[in-house]
Length: 156
Image (cartoon, rainbow, N blue to C red; front, side, top):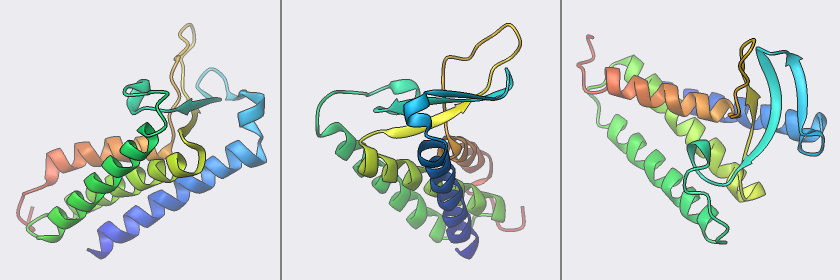
């Protein structure tokens, strides 16, 4: 469980520190965009009120609270499930990634009413219209890791 816990805390800290730097120190919420290594890496501020790609976004005041509740419920379920044992270290690591990312985005919803997305990666001749954050990467990697590694015996 220590691996899951420390991974979750590390992801949460990296996510929240990166968002603080980009939103507050670099003032990206006001500037809107900052080219870092164009076109490969750019900062493009996007306040995501829904889930991935803005799905379930709504102007209803209760929607951020519903999404926070879902994040907390999923995180608690994954924590309890991985705690039962029988999972290799890769699955415990994946669980920590997912939990840390979900909690990071939930904190954004509590602080801002939306998730602060700012990473944008494009290619020469193709501009990606979407932004994401460290929590999103961790959630995706954690979900894939749980699919691939959970339920296997500890010797795997």
